[in-house]
Amino acid sequence: MHLVVISGRSGSGKSTALHQLEDEGYYCIDNMPARLLPGLFDTDEGNTPLAAGIAVCIDSRNILKDLEQFPALLESLPPDVDTDVVFLDAEDAALLMRFSETRRRHPLSDDNTSLAEAIRQESALLEPLASRASLLIDTSQMTIYELRSAIRQRILGNRSGDMSVLFQSFGFKRGLPSESDLIYDLRMLPNPHWDAKLRKLNGRDSDVIAYLQQQPVVEEYYQDICRFLDRWLPEYQANNRSYMTIALGCTGGQHRSVYVTERLYERYRQSYSEVHIRHRELLHW
Image 1: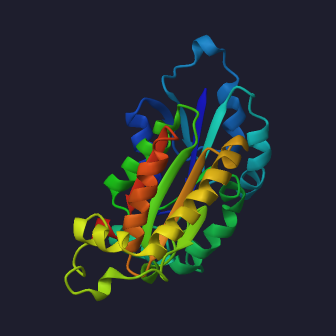
Image 2: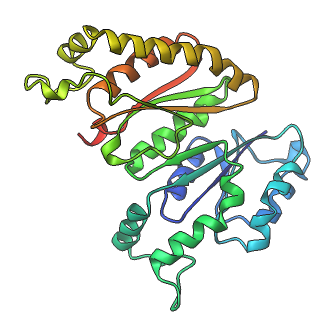
């Protein structure tokens, strides 16, 4: 039986994630009291009205005691329950903007607690769930469609049992991707941005590829990354790691990081059945 627990701060996209799982045939429960989680598996297998699995949303609308006991509740589930805990989050500024646009009330805000304070308090409240997350997704710069695609690829696409690996390029000037497990800094490599003919292109364009292929230091760094991943990705997988997000950043996330990310994706898709790629800045370029 596959169980997906969706959690995260309010406004991060939990409903969107749950709707995607429902569309894929999961039996979905929103705002579920955490203490009831073990009871989902008390019924006989033949009487369980399920197809793909169960997806539940457990968040700050729960009582504090139940949230604190979440790790113990997970441990009490039957051993044949395959569980993914997915924690969605976004930058404070993004959450503030989303609540401002929708004009919805935050579940922790009241006459004495501002929206900004409620957003900060929610992080501490949900720490027991965040600490047990098998996958963290930062939705700050995602559209609804990008989030649905991420859920479909990383959760539903991972049913093979192989480790799901995401290679993601980003620009340091827009901040670190918080969901990253490994981060590589490419800012010391030669920058195509300073060539006027290449400035408006990106790392998937042939002229930029040709430029970077001519730089020995780029190849040396790429090979160093490969040596590290060849050595340690199997160890992560052997330790029952289900998801790995490997982020590669340059200044703007347009040239160097895109080029190296594309090369890593093409290399490791030959070794792992679940390999994905995302260029964070090109989505908004």
